[in-house]
Image 1: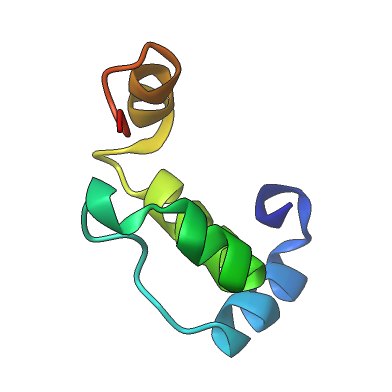
Image 2: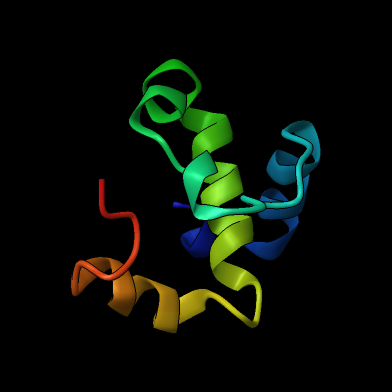
Length: 69
């Protein structure tokens, strides 16, 4: 959702939802998603755009190497 927004709209929305992205995998939880879905989305977007995450992290999740419970 955030990736498809125009840059100006995304900046406004992210400005209304302060944060810096997830600091570690254990912060990415279903409970957070269920209780604060918009904030979860903003933090997920911020997490994904960090150079050390992005597509590499997503591939790890899909392969079962990250976020395994």
